[in-house]
Amino acid sequence: MPVLAINGGEKIRSKLFPAYSVIGKEEEEEVIKVIKSGVLSRFLGAWHEDFYGGPQVRALEEEWAGYFGVKHAIAVNSATSGLYCAVGAAGIGPGDEVVVSPYTMSASATAPLVYNAIPVFADIEEDYFCLNPESIERKITERTKAIIAVDLFGQPYDAAAKNALARKHNLLVIEDTAQAPGAKYKGKYAGTLGDMGVFSLNYHKHIHCGEGGIVATDYDELADKIRLIRNHAEAVVEKKGFDSLVNMVGFNYRMTEIEAAIARQQLKKLDGLLKKRLENVDFLTAELSKIPALEPVKTRSGAKHAFYVHPVKYRSLDTGVSRNRFVDAVKAELMPTELREAEGVNIGSGYVRPLYLQPLFQRQTAYGNNGCPFKCRNYEGSVDYSKADCPVCEDMHYNTLLTHELMRPPISKEDLNDVVNAFKKVWENINELE
Image (cartoon, rainbow, N blue to C red; front, side, top):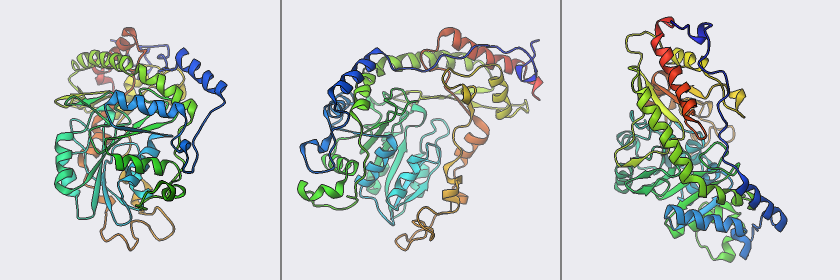
């Protein structure tokens, strides 16, 4: 029998996995055109025809709206900025609460804090990892103003249940679809399922322009507010004739012309990149399902998954081998990915530590020395992040879930076989780990 690499045996794979590189000649040519034009940005933080940006930004917004079938698409310099814009446009402020996910990139949960509102964590679904509607409802109070629903790992959130819940309690739904461009739920694109949807164009997403984001909405008033917050609202509202001053302190969340030019070419590639990603996941799902301890992720009924990563559940069964030990053994059989060598093999035990365990929430201090906004006089509620009541999230992170990125194009069939064989080798020799 072969000896596991973690115990000194020969690895399954001895070469790096190919880099996920989606920038090509098309982007290069468009960037050169922008540079030669001399217009690298055309935003002005004043009420002027250039308040809405330059020709590349406007073209990207039009093309994005057309592709996703939404009325408004507003380009920003990151998805984080987009979340901040969306929370501001929702009119959320001091004393309000927003239900958020504990299992996501931190900006999805900290966005309410920008407006001195309080994030309240609900638990996630065991099968799909998005917010659990029943847990959301338990967390709603008279202070709740919105839900930030994350399409985690590329899985669209349960729009039927959560949107009905939002209507019942008069809440807005902000959809964080950073990991799910091209995913769908009942024929409608993720990012257009809620009142506002936020896409990411960060360098490790499906398509990217280095940094960047898009906020999508069908509502004219919300779109107006997002554009104002993006670009120095306070300097513009008077001349624009915008009456509401709620959250109209603006920022510089503007996208450059070079980023927009790259993003326009990237959007054209999304269908092909997603198709290949789904084919790779289908192969891995079929093969890994043959291992009794593994349960690849399910796709929600009526949904199309986008697979930012490939989530898999691990059950120790009667082996006595923990998830972490199993993952370490699989990683020892493989190699890192080109351009990301320092990160090691792209397989992780869990995802991110539950966000409520961060010092920010455990110590309940964000602004100043007085514990604001958690302990400020505008907030009449209370939150106890030490008892966040998210047992599914904690079980997934500490015991059950593993995620990997070894399904992104241009991963080949040979590469995929190495991944499968690494998992199989560890399972077949699991007694070495006991």
